Amino acid sequence: MKHINYVFFLIAIFAFSSLTASAQETDVKVIDEVVAQVNDGVITLSRIKREMNDAIDSLVQEGKKPREQAKAEIESKQGEIIANLVNEELLLQKGKDIGVESEVDAQINQRFLGIMRQENIKSLDILYQEMRKTGVNPDDIRENWRKQFTREAVFQREVDSKVYSALSSKEVKAYYEANKSKFTRPETVSISELFLGFAGRDMNAVRENAKKIVAQAKSGVDFGKLVAENSDRADAKTTKGKNENINVKDLDEKFAKPLASLQVGGVTDPIELTEGMEILRLDNRTKASNESFYDENDVRKTLTYERLPQERKKYMSELRADSYIKINESYRSLVSPILFADDRKTEAKKSDK
Image 1 (cartoon, rainbow, N blue to C red):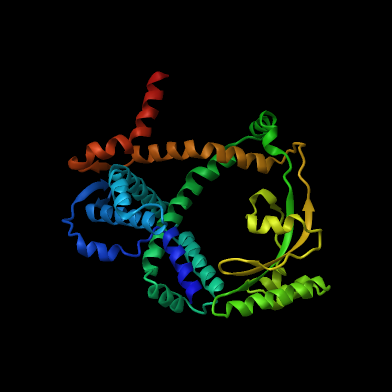
Image 2: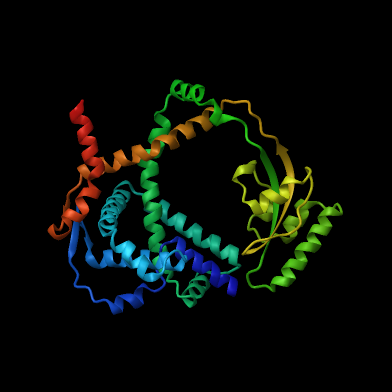
């Protein structure tokens, strides 16, 4: 149960959900007011205060800042926070317009199901109960994920996919010729993995079981059979633990180090993680090469990612221009220089031409 508590704490941090916001809100009485109107939606002072409290709590809980220092830092960024909320509201509204709700709901449900599998929890109701025991509100987590996934879904449909598909083969090839050093062949490995979770079990017993399985594998027992019979991964019986090629440079040091000295077909000793024990078998290794190679899809993705930051900024500028945005006079001088900075740069470039 200690492990489950730790996992839920991390979920709360990653979702930017405050574990103590409700207590703080009872201490601070806020007379609500509309700070910004965004088309038919509004951003209120209470919402801004909640966002600021969440940001302060995140800094404190991650051990980055003492509370007073975190409070001063976040309060100095109030204008930036309000500007971000305006942009978020525009993206959430756009998400409704283009119909990403079902896609987002499916992503959220999959995320919760993944946690259930990882923690060996049999139902969503039980998961929610365990979360609430640790002070994490699953409704808050769901809402934060909804906003996060909606933002990404809008960018994916409206910007990313269009940038990717608009690139001509000629343009992609020219980029490759000018940047060959980016496309050398990296060292890759393909592995099979067997995972034993700690959740709901005696951790020492899990460690001992992992050692026995490694001994069996090294004595010649088929690794795929061991995975199917022992692994806690939901798809273990189907996949036998096999993974596609992975760039070695992308591997966590916990995995890269034991794999480095293995011969193909070799099995690592048990690798202890926070959530359980991992056993890896090296199925194949491809050495790195300094020779450049052309893979149009890989080059196209690289060029797309390079252009996305600017293209997303351009999209947001256009979205703001097509929307009704009114900032409360009391906050305008704080917010407008940040919110419309990119729009002014765009206008300046147009006037120069």
